[in-house]
Image 1 (cartoon, one colour):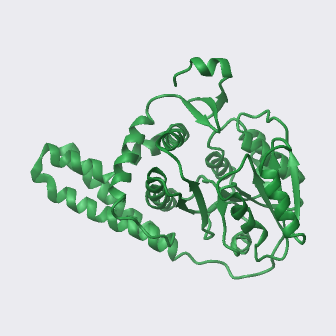
Image 2 (cartoon, rainbow, N blue to C red):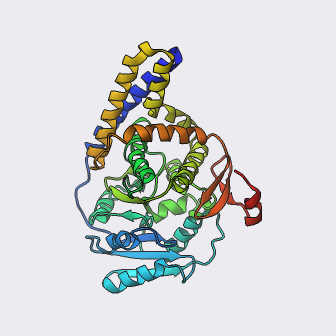
Image 3 (cartoon, rainbow, N blue to C red):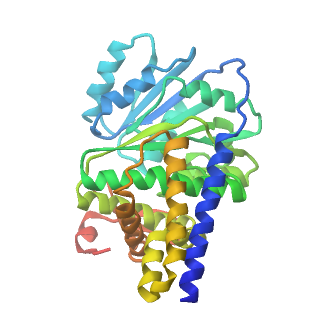
Length: 378
């Protein structure tokens, strides 16, 4: 019981720290406007994500004087090409380029696309954004203001998850809009930004080159995390941007949602093992249930921890991300994320875009050949 009380108390302290970290982020002073330097937007594409045209349209409609958009697909028959061509005709004044990369030689196909696009980009300041992202019209203005700091090498954009109508999509979005960002905000307070998180990252070309370019990231599944980690280790500034983007996660069934979550948990455990262990303190609900089950008189501790957790969830979702919190589904997500956290300790394979990969202990991964994949149970 003493251990459970300590864990529940620790989870309450973590929630309080999340509140403090969120309020500190909101109070951060932003630089004053100055000259707007040109920016290259890099968009790796693969297939038709739900709402792809609406997602890409937000890139074309940036309120910014000088930018270009580069797209990369594996082959010219990719269905996303037709979407890009329609938008290029609709916005002829926006400078764009479409690259056909061919079959990627890297384990991480996205990194190969980014490598090719960076080589073709005209500008030093790059904004790398996934295909399921929508942005406000002023994202590029926000980013360029932050990069007035000459020491800044990487800026990672927080994101609000927008779910599809399915149940599993909705509860996953709640977790992203509360716990995921909360963890980033807490890490920012405790140790500074020593990492980056996708799905939208801005970077100086010079910073990427100094860490070995994308060639150094090619074998990592969490290439966004190690990009920021390597940049921080090289002495470049890494920041959590004020530019919040929308991550449209679509509507998935349980099987697809579970595969996605297992990919994330197994990757996180290898990218940041001690941080992954510490995630237990972000889960007060299952800890509170365990405490009350073992010792019913411990309910005041459990109730206090849950109250602070709900306040933290509200502040992060409503104040930082400006998204409405579904209070009824929040406990369901808390229990689901605990189950996937436990599952993350087991297995070393993942499924990504229909292919099976093997994860290594240092966060690298490799494609499992099709014949071997059939026999591999993960």
